[in-house]
Length: 237
Image 1 (cartoon, rainbow, N blue to C red):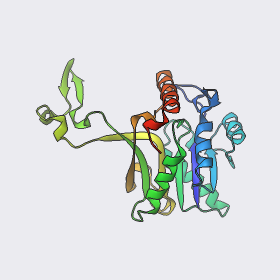
Image 2 (spheres, one colour):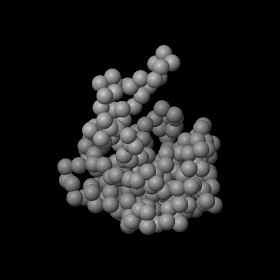
Image 3 (tube, rainbow, N blue to C red):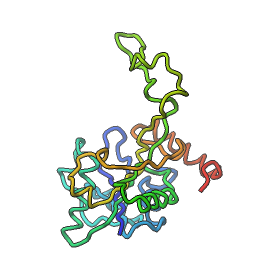
Image 4 (tube, rainbow, N blue to C red):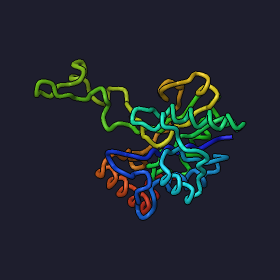
């Protein structure tokens, strides 16, 4: 069995109420819930929240909220690994165990059920893998990044200033859309970060995801959503 966990803490400071803010006329969390319910991957889709209003919205869109998140996992410093662990351990106390779990972010309005299905297939067909992470390729290798030091622009690594981008190893960033885990190794090792897992990458187009922390991020996500709705052929299923 597999569990979908949608973390949706209340009290966002940079974009207040973002987890249930209307996105093209629908609470943004509803997109993640819909995708998780329709993909056929999960025996349950639950929302982990400390906010009664978010819980009410989640229930209206078909997710379960069997318990509220604890105070200890609801602050600004708690990592997502701790949230997932709390959910799995709370279910285990009532005799419910899951072989795999997917952490699907509440603001993942661009997620498609086909990507959830693809991630599950990857995990099922690679027994040595402990998880799946969605990633996006950086436009340029991160090794050629520049920094500003003493008001001057310099390469972060001096050895890179003579390198051609096409000769460098490609780099990727976390798409902030979903994480999959095998629950047994995840719980046994009491990991504090997801990065410690042996994970395979699920590569997404930059059009398929948008980390949302500011109103500018929000508007960009809306534009991507509208564009993909009008041009579904851009990213074939």
